[in-house]
Image (cartoon, rainbow, N blue to C red):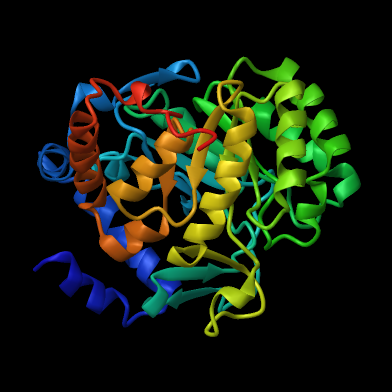
Length: 352
């Protein structure tokens, strides 16, 4: 049975139910004898030309899993067998929270996209920290995606991020600051220069780990560039461009709430990434996320200035072979262009 057959079965379930079934399956299988070795052999592709040492750690390949899939750090072991170069867990908050009312996750199947209004549902810092302590250091770089609780007012949001950096310092390879989800009321209002400066000035003394800012795709390019420049000057080591979109004109099938990811935001994400990269490439590590579903997509973003790329929706639509396929094809694309390492291709199209 190939993944298309499995997907037909999964897509008969509500998206959240399907996700829980997949989580249970992965967590069960990984505990079987030799399961990890079998999965790695089937789903991983290793080639030194895809490796990079950036942000103080080694990445075997540039393809990561974006935050939101493994919110509670329960699937890192099986996910590490599917060919990813790095994993991002969370978004996690100081206190547990249930998230927004259901239904809150929707498939836009014809457009190979997803719309979610989850609302940072997670087990909370105490339980997730206990898992991280058993797991870390890990086989792959782990990013901790952190956010504020819904009940925390914006004028006290800084305390939530400060608490989480203190709690998870030494339990990840980098922090991702999520102030760009559309599913926590008024969270995107924090995407202002004054808060960014205050946020980084508070967090930087607390950790030696890289701190990464994740921005929304719906900002005007000029504001996004200004915000990223401010983050850079305040101590950010990397920028993730971007989170989900609230541009509901992208599909006539879209709901009027939540954030859209997948193929529908490919062009929007690419345009914003180019705008930021043309200004900031070489000054800060850039990570591209949004509508990436093939080696060609990834290679285009890499040549535009991305050291790393992240996928999420395409993992759901294309299945666990996607990283192996993308990595092997990326290797071929690099060889075709005469590159012996991916770092030589990063940014060659900046400004073009």
